[in-house]
Amino acid sequence: MLGSLLSKLADGQRRHDERSTQLGLRYVIADGISFLNPAHWDAIAESATVFLSRAYLTALDAHSPVNTDQRYAIIYQDQVPVGIVAAQIAEIGGDQLATAEEGEHAKTKLLGTLRERVLVCGNLVSSGLHGVAFADGLDPELGWRAVAEILYRIRRGEKLGGSIDFVLIKDLKGARFAESEVLGRYSYRPIQSDPDMVLELDTPCSTFEDYLALLTSKYRSKIKKLPKALAKAGFVVERLDDVQSEEDALHRLYLQVEARAPVRLATIPRGYFGAMKEALGDRFVCSVIRKDESIVGFVTTVIDGDEAIGYYVGVDYDVNAEFPIYLVLLQRVIADGVSQGCRKISFGRTALEPKANLGAKPVDAHVWMRHRVPALNFLLRKLFPIIPYDEAPERNALKQ
Image (cartoon, rainbow, N blue to C red; front, side):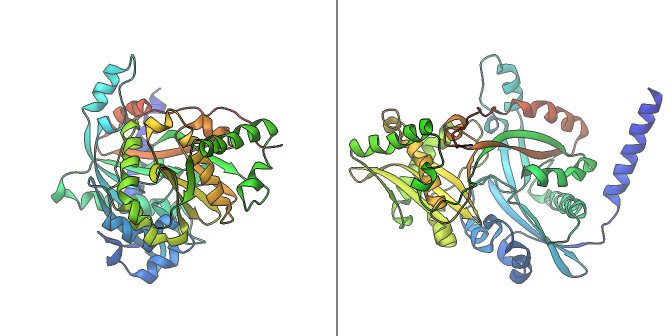
C-alpha cells in the first residue's frame, strides 16, 4: 500500500514536470479568426473539417451565441504552422447540463448550483472534433500536448474577464480519441457522451432511391410510406436555396427543438442559418416541409468532404404530433448527402431509434474535461454521468 502511494506521488511529480517543460513550439493566439495569418491557417485547415475553414469561422464570429466568445491559435514548429486550435469561452450553468429526472432531484439540484466560465476546445454549436487540426506528419502526442499548453495560456490570460476554472475538449471518436490519451497526463478526465449515429454506405449512391435499394424490404417499406403520407395530406418537401428569406421561420422552429433539449450549452442567434449558407454555399443544404406556404419543419445538412452532417433541425411539434415531419426530415439528410456524393451520413446524438431504423450505427464519442481545483475536478468527474446518455438500439436495416 505504501509502495502504491509512493508510486502515485512520483507519477504526480512526473506529470507536473511534463506540464512545466516547454515543448519547443510557438503559438499565436487571437480573439478573432481575422487577426491570424490567413495563409498559415489555411495551410492546416484546407485538409481538415469545413468547421475549421475561415469562411465558416468568420460567419461564426459574427453570429456566435450570446454566451460565447471565440479564441483561435496557430501552432508553429521551426516557424512553420503545424496545427490550429479553435476554442470558445462560454458562460454555462448546471441547469444547462441536465434536467431533473425522477429520483435524481438531489443530484440535479447539486449540478444546478454550478455556474462556470468554461473554456471549450471545439464548437458548442456543432458536434465533432471541430477545434483541433494538425499538419500531416506531426506527432499526435506532441500536437495534443501543444493543445493543452494553448488552453492553459488562454485560461491564464482571461483573468480580467473572470476566472476560468473548467476546460472541455470536444468531441473525439475512434482513433482520434486514442491519439489524445496524453491529455490524461495533464489531469484531463475522459467522459463518454451520447453516441453519434452514423450511416455508412458501402455502395455509392447518388439518389435517395439508390439508398432505398440497399435496405431490407421491411425497413424500405416503412420508410417509403412516410413521404407518401405527407404528400397525401398536402405537404410539400423541397430544398430551400434562399435561406435568408425564411430566417425568422427557421429560427422559430429551431427554438421549439432547442427548448426540449436536455443539454443546452449554447443557443444560436437569429441570422445564423443565413450566414452559414452565405459562407459555405453548396456545402450548406437546407430542406423544408411546407403546408399552405408555411414551413412546419426544416433540416440543414453540412457537406464535409465525403461526409454529410445532419446539422440543425426545426419542427412544429403540434403538426409533428399528427404527421411524421421529423422522420421525413431525417430522410432528407440522406437525400441531400448522397446527391453530393457523400458515403457517410452523420445524424448526431438525439432520437437514436429512428436513426437506427434508417441504418445508422452508434459511434462512441468522448469529451475531455478538467477543473483547475483538484477537489472539484474529482467532483465533476462524478457529476458528469448525470448528463443524459442513451444506449443506441440495435437494428439491421441495411442488407448484409
